Image (cartoon, rainbow over all chains, first blue to last red; front, side, top):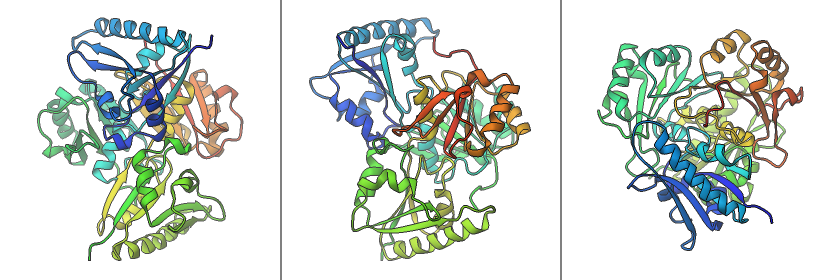
Length: 234
Length: 234
């Protein structure tokens, strides 16, 4: 019997219209859909794709506990991968939904790592929150020979300072509770005036402002873009 | 009279199905479409969107001469922006097509720079060739706290070596005629075994191979990904 194909689907930054035609089609054809969700909460990726999902699709929810340490989440992905593997073995395709792009800081890697050696996998890339945030500021992220560095906001100040020194533009991802510290760091480095903040990129409640006007509390999926070079486009 | 809106549309990496639903809809509704093309050649962005473009749409082709120096291309963008401005002033929306994402090393910045102060602009982000290339290798580009650096292959070896030292993953864009030099550099740095090459990401003739198996002649739109860290996903 032919086994099914595992699809890793990028759902883009949030606006359901920023899903690719391919991701939409494959999802709308799928009989089995899997996605992570915060334990007790709604899956952002599923909410983006809600209109594409068939009413009769079987849904595998990986309810990730919001606790410290890797082991609890990894146990959930173990269990999810087992359920997905059963469908694949029985010849059914499985679509795994992932915000943004599946391979750009995406949770899909946990499923991919567990199943890619045993099953055919196909990745459908998506629009990242990074370029959606750039769009919110109407300013080229990088141009010509610019160097771009992408930094998780979870890194400590020393590492961030080193890496911010060697690029023309920088994107800091996963801001959340780190925002006050990051604001202070960028002020200290003289970069606050070149930094821009976006939360909920591409959604109706998107907030896109200079960093100095950003709130003190930021959601996890918020982003800071720092344009270090001259305005690159003339 | 209300002026028109300038749309910067990301067409994604090449597969027409990797265009977002929003980019497809806005293009299919547009009466005026503009795009750059190599002088005497076909526009890649237009070829991606061919099925969406209305037969009666007016098309503004910015034929960019493939010569050294910035001035000849900038003159073409001056002229293109003037034509676009006439339509906008007359109240007609104009869609400008751009491969990948309009603000990620995109030519759209030349039009945006000339018109954003005078007209309403909206950017529709797209899938970049970077994440499409990552998808071709079925391997997470970045995960968790990884640092990503994006480097144009046009930079000289000294700069590339410095920047490759401080990241977990690197993407080298705009390879083209620089491929033999880049191969030699990565061999010298002991990174050749961790480097992967993609050309024509997402198209039927996509080539995705370890760098050591890459051809010596690469198209301009080819990419090298270097995974420096351990396999990040377990």
